[in-house]
Image 1 (cartoon, rainbow, N blue to C red):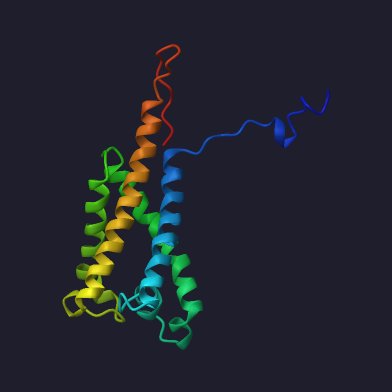
Image 2 (image 1 turned 60 degrees about the vertical axis):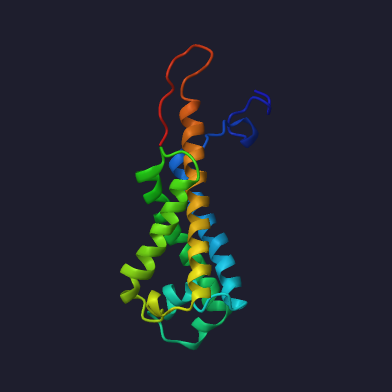
Length: 178
């Protein structure tokens, strides 16, 4: 058997595509890192008085390192993991929704959940009514953009996969990969 036909070589193995759920979880992690990173920049440039580190680390750990770059980077990674949970929730509840508006409303709902209902858990974050208008505007916009990113990405992948279920060659249903 020649090297070109040997199945143990990587170039001769078939690549298995990711399921829609796997893509949704990756989207959640990347979205958490990306939008959290932009949130860190907004905090650094004083567009907001709270950062993801205020929620994730400073509310539970009272140490000087949580105020610096190390605290921001650790909380950014943790935000990526938490965001995977948020994207999984979107996947379960709204993956069939089309367009950007479901994601926008999802992001707004996340902001309301975090700032009003979960706020007592976050001792390092003032109540939403006590935040200045610039912080409220900035964080609402971040959550809305995050929701639009997560929502549109997940629903796009779901509908792309859903549209390709019917094989155009023979009209038969393909098996669903979730």
